[in-house]
Length: 190
Image (cartoon, rainbow, N blue to C red):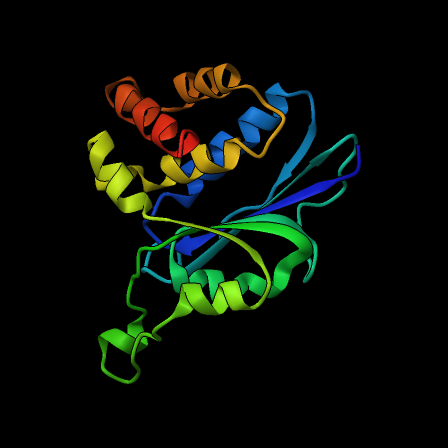
């Protein structure tokens, strides 16, 4: 199998680390060689974060260059725009429609841009925009956005729902298990 590349992008505190753990574990379970980068960015300060995941028969490095990502999962609209150039021409981007103001907007130095999703769609990219925050709230917690988005992405992978559930059961603490299973299914069934 040729190497496939997935980027998980968002803002610190959105759960990108758990998302990358779930993805990496599911891919290992699927029999792939997997490399996952550390989270890069200001993950503890609400800044931009990115995780690279590569998988295939043999993977040497997790780093993804511009134009190489098969899938980009974006936890926030502006992060989707920031990382769009990393997606392959025939790649797929899954975007949470949620907006989180960057520090420049919080301080009043800038305004959050309007029409981000529309601009992404006009770029010709294959965009799936979903309100993952509402689905996470339906599952029981706004903190489940990450697992909703993993559920959406899982439909585009060659790993069964049952395998994903086993990975969730092994990775998520027991007290949050049912919440995360529901969040995954809400995304998976979108």
